[in-house]
Image 1 (spheres, one colour):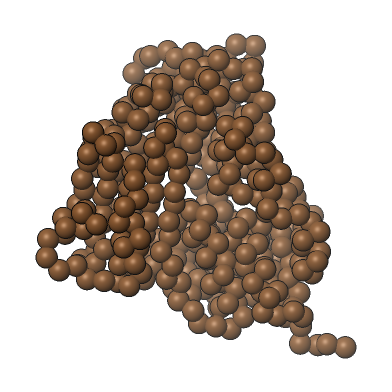
Image 2 (cartoon, rainbow, N blue to C red):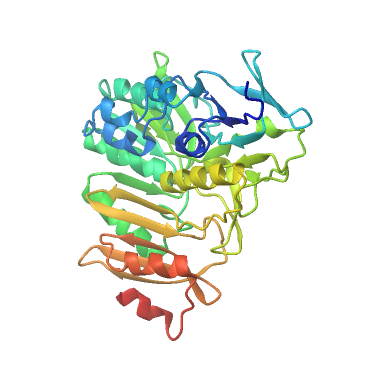
Length: 404
């Protein structure tokens, strides 16, 4: 009888957790791998949810893994199961179903939960977050009955909702409390281009206002009243107002938590047997020599690979260049590397060509390129990504990089 079997427990079955589980199994055919998943589904593609909402992608293409895949790899998948307590002294995880799992190494990949609208009527029927497959199904059902929509927030999620609602034929108003979309990533010129693209797509964008109240009729949302006193008809309200990271599991464990679960460059926490990955991970980013929180799909996937290697005993430094790409009201948006979202003191150069509807902004930390954003074209993206990865130092005028 084998006595040296290792047990790995993974909390969260998004792309970070599932990728880690797959890599663990590839490297250790004999280990026990337990995955605790709060949702009722195996891994699905969150990046595809906007396309699913727009009826451009069928549901079967959103789903990435099924329960048979987990069984074939010998992965113990526990759906609709929340981890509620970690005891580092006994190295155990307790679930809301009363189960107890002992671990040799634990991976926390719990992601975050979307913030709600804390105003009168903010929990009315017809007010939706857009985070999960179940959220998307509820929104799709409501859209079929709706004629007008309000989207709240200046985030990627808010944009995806605004584009989807307009694509589905709804009269759409987009409320952004700041002066522009992605105000920490785009400068004024970038915001001006997005504003033009949104209005050309038929979206009414309102800046500098928030929701004061959601009015209802028959128990469902009917209007949104803004802090400026405007009243906007709305059969559906979509929210993109940020995430609260799911760090509560580690309360009282002694593991360092700030906004996210703090790790070193190997994704190990202050407890040597506990790792973190994905959205919830506040990791030491060697690109900017500081800590980052990154909520992109490819960052989470690469986190899963690195965390798995290090849970098995490696000492790999996480040094992937994260990237995010999306449509943008008939144009394209691409972000690579670090942005002022993760380090507000980054310097930058930018260029807008309104005639061609293109924009780029490149971010610098000291004398190195660390990130960039492109709208309406990706020319130079490969070279910039290589410079970020290679930690290349920039000599001469920074503006020359805008010509790549």
